[in-house]
Length: 168
Image 1 (cartoon, rainbow, N blue to C red):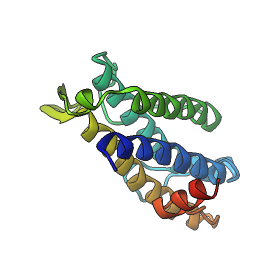
Image 2: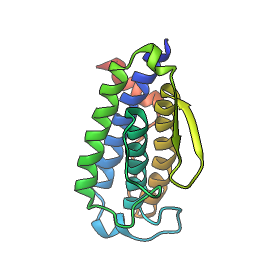
Image 3: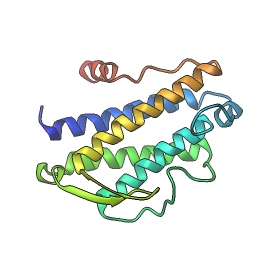
Image 4: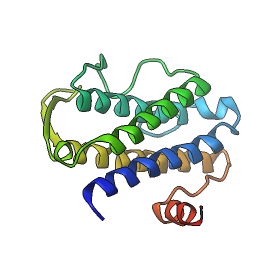
């Protein structure tokens, strides 16, 4: 499998896994989604918002644009329905980007400033793969919080995605 094929697969996987996560979260009582918990980002909603913010920041890095964020989350969290719409649009953007980016561009080193200070440098491929692992990491926290409700998360593992894609 080429690097390009891997990046495309992982961006599609990420969109699929996000959809499965939101499928469960949107069935949860609203007060449970926003309930403060002993977790880094305070709640299910703020954890999902953090994922969106980081995705949006890296889109700016990939396009050479500016993002306007001053932190890795926002002071206020949008309503879940709005956040899910924004995440779906961003997931679609990433899939389109991965499908259209050239092999040469995937190897290009992009420098950027971290929102909490310091400079970073990653290839475009590293950025796209980072987003897949970053999102998976935080979906684990969301799954734990869903279990506390209790509401059973839907599996979002890569092997489950591959099984479903290959069946289709």
